[in-house]
Image (cartoon, rainbow, N blue to C red; front, side):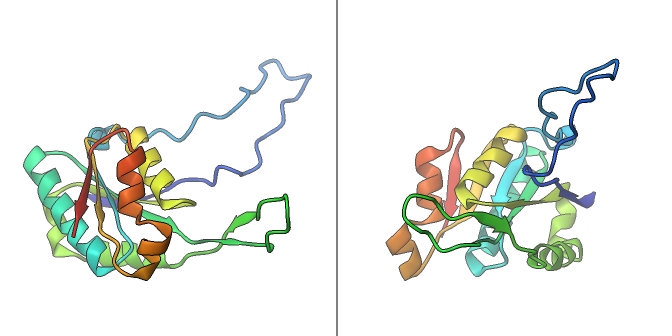
Length: 175
């Protein structure tokens, strides 16, 4: 069982309640419910890098051994639309990230994913926050990520390190 799950952006315009309507709209639409087949699954961050491929391999084995589903998460790029000017923080917009489609096609053709049921979830924003949010939505047993190598991770802190500090569920970091 293989597939893709793409959620609607959170900032999408919500319908306005009609005062003459018999049933008023709810104050906020409920978040798209996740597939119950993937409840208590294994969440893995994946961007196609070598370390994320290692994390994916470990997560596949973990999901296979526990008999659960695999939730593969790709966090799309978000870029600032303006330069930060004093008091106002920069505004972030979702930039079309065709990398998710490419990763989805590569994963759909991968033989090693035939062992477990899996889905690909695309999100936009802070990687740590989005991985933890997906973990919460699916009530994941663990989040698996690859370690960050290089100077960027040393300067800004690695995703794995930040996630391990703030996550409410086990985080497994694969070197």
